[in-house]
Amino acid sequence: MFVADFLRELFGNIARYADSTQRYVVLVSAAQDRVTIDVTDRPRQGDATLEGRHSGLAYYRERVLHAHGDWDVREKRGQWVLHASAPVDNAG
Image (cartoon, rainbow, N blue to C red; front, side):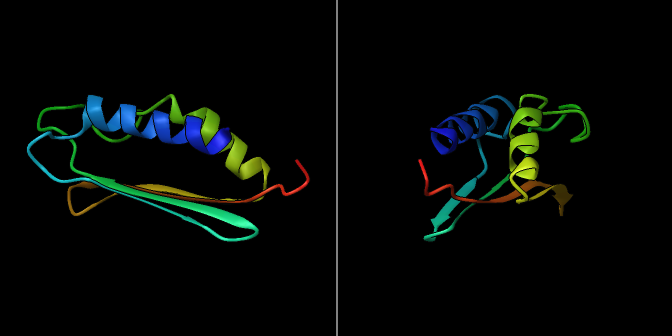
């Protein structure tokens, strides 16, 4: 359920903040013990800076880091880039 909710948050952010005239990429990969999500989009012109945006992602960042996963959000060549990777709990 966590992955589905996280993806819903990410696609909601793309709809709200990304430039609809530009492409976006969402990659999801799953291994036996880990799930990885990478997102790249181009923010709309005139939107606030990338700092402080996507405050709804704070919950997911905390969950990923609490699970000893990896979290990186940055601006790269004018694009918003997120990388999140977390262990999968196979016990339940």
